[in-house]
Length: 137
Image (tube, rainbow, N blue to C red; front, side):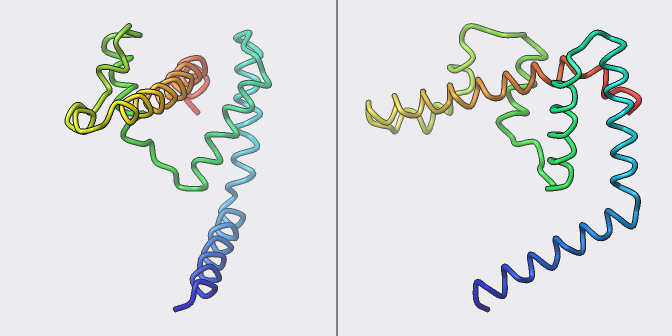
């Protein structure tokens, strides 16, 4: 099967899913949830535009079927159990893989891991900030 056929099938599947969302009232529910979320943010003194962006990102992830990646879950578990620790990168390092790398590869691996950790930490902070809005949503 050619790449065009596979892309066409994917496009058809996405169109079907979009049509199902419309039929099932997904967007009207989404709009009411968004209004409720912004109202909760306003009442609690949170930044409404940040709350709106957070909500939109959650909906986008829901539509695309994104699942929380293993790395984020590991970071989240560490942060919930021990908080922010000074040796987070060391704890997250895959020692078996790391030991087989050259000096330059170790440096690159550590920088990449550090960037991933910072993104996961920022995501965790956003989720904690808006956790109150997610309850009863």
